[in-house]
Image 1 (tube, rainbow, N blue to C red):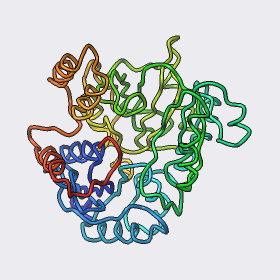
Image 2: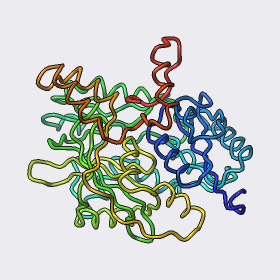
Image 3: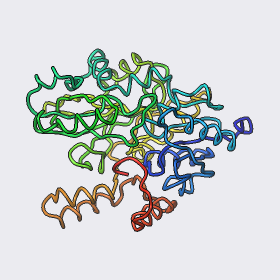
Length: 390
């Protein structure tokens, strides 16, 4: 591999519209990495970035994953890559599951660790054992459905498992009562997944981010979200960094140690009116607001990659506070629905927030992804591949 020549090479496999993977590729390129991308369409928005060099066709990890593994192997050999990253839950888990077939180090933990982190029931149980609050989460059995009172969030227990055949991720959805959730529960079952019921938490979304190694969370970034799309359970369209809550971070480290985790991690919390953060998700790969973390605390992806390669790394200080993030396209779509103070005022407020914020796609020195998205939306015949909200 080319690392011996002082040139680190990373392959990112993901959908072509993964905003987190795009932000990671830009950051790694700034830190001197050569970055290649493998996507189902051989490029997409991600491949149009000047941060990315070669592009490869890597099918989604579905069914037996034979085509996925073959695509990764071909890409690694063609580009002599030193490490491979997955851009989404399914890509991450599949790389972990088939790591022994891949001729380069995989950046993610072993498959049993990854599957435990992706399992909503297991994550809630382990979070509570670590002293973290977590919403009531139960498998959608007949007994649980019969006993459930009040509003409910319906989720897939996990977004990937070996042999998965469903083509897309089924997102969480909030319902006013268990009766109105019946169709969603059936949809998840018919897709071959296991539905879970989760207690809704009224509060604001936040996240704690860092690279976990040697029992500690390094390069910590904490953020709060003020707007979401789709509303009310979508991704951050606006976020801002705040000072790290050391007590929360200490409990998170207990959880990650118990899981056996290492590498990049984003833990999402809903903080209720009493100030208690409830853990709702763990993302062990590049995430939607990665651009904010990169700007407020540069070097997370670079540090992660170098740890995988066994290099010594310097400790990363906590992120700067007050740094703003905008996913402008999602925020404008949200404004069209929420219309806070009226449509015109919400749109104006969205544009004001975006000014001076760090963006998930837009970058003046890397216009390829923005132009690709703009032209693809104008072309009704282009196949839209990727996660909702891309």
